[in-house]
Length: 251
View (tube, one colour):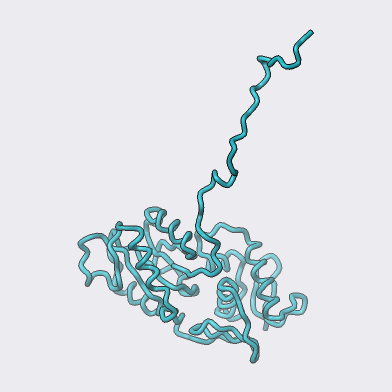
């Protein structure tokens, strides 16, 4: 008779489960971000800033990457800081002046020994201490550094008004509290002046072309925006769905 306690050599050995929490296998990725600030990075070599981008996201920054300063999306996006990579060559005076006209604080990353008169903005030597760079970036977080966008401080459609300088949206006399993403989507729609915007275009303008989320992300935020504006999608007063394409303002 076979001993039922005998180990079968052909059977797999029992696995020992480590006595530790599953969460211990995962590193801490920073605290939950109740609020965030947005940094737009312009760098022809974004891969070289991978560690910096990771550190900034842990510090509750939304980071958008652009390869070139003339990207049209930059003119439609709002941000708290422009971080310009000039470590391998300076931008032209024309490019710097164009960016400066946005009214957004600017900080340049430069290589050691770069003459200050070739930079055109506040700067810090990079590579350097990550801690020092993050502290310098955080110094721009004061409310006084909030930008004025695009030269026109007001946008309006019917009784919806946007004060871009103060980042205030109102419907008639009622103030509407929007998230940063909802604010950006509404700004993009109002800036398009009735033109149809595809979901992909809206994603590029609000999240940047480095964002790889699905188009349903736009739909979810538009749904929330409509709700806050009191807009019925079946009988829209403000935002019209263009089936199979995207969205536009009502006539």
